[in-house]
Picture 1: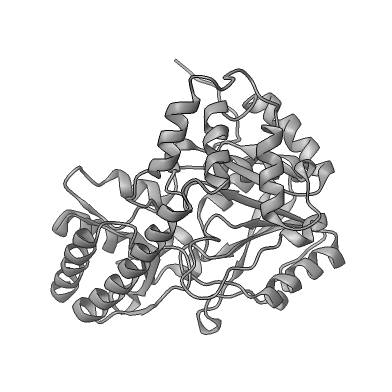
Picture 2: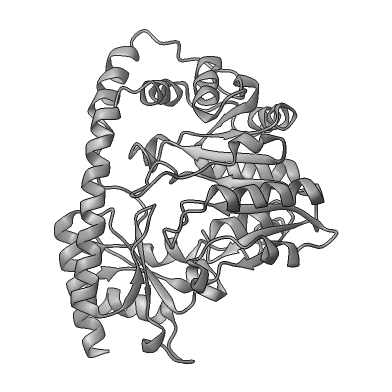
Length: 380
């Protein structure tokens, strides 16, 4: 049988993150997943168990429940209202919806290198062309507005930024974000700011682009902050006209986010789980420090201690060669040590000499997994 398919997905495969994770088995020590091993906060589970018997469970507004949108707006910054918010099925659907609304065939979108690999694929699915901009290691992987400006062409429509940054843990300053906002105003661009790790911060605070909403779309979700990955609940904060178009996209693509997940989001954002989340952040900081100590003692690799997110970004370039890539190294680790790490090649060409290790796993798995990485590198 000949199956005729569109060109939209031709050449687009699962990200290397997913391909590597798919090689793992139930007994693998997984330091690859960007998923906290904490359960959904008990207060949210209890609130949903009680409320689900009485909450309306029909369709909601395409852009989400008005009370949830209002709550997100008030948390996002002064002067924002429910008209600035569209609720989505997780952050990735939000990014897809935004790019479907913004991008025409052949338009260019600047994407970070290193950066979350789905950005490039989603740009292509929307008909656009991803153009990488480099986050230089010697600047701590932070933004350089002049680097962004050098990448602009008459076809550039948007720039994607991500802080706290996956995979490096870099956190951008308010000044760096203001430079991005100014660049977008100057060149009539839209900044898509992926802020899903904004609450996962270990020193200081993470700034947001939400105050510049005229030229910005801020994307966030419950997944990383509240350990609610499976609830698939995210949102966009943007100019009301863009939100109107995103609501139309939702109506045609998903109708609306699931009502029960929106109710769970209200519980979370109203503070039902704040005490538990504070404890979780304390535990995550301890895991970061544990992972950093183990990586230093067991491997001797150079790495950065992240200010945000939950990854260590380690340099393995000395262990690579033209015939042995970071992907090869990651696959060998699974085969020989049953440990999953993510190759830098998953995050871009500039990242090919590194690996990403998640400290969202349990302390026992962090210690044993990194011990095995060290053993493997000692033999490699």
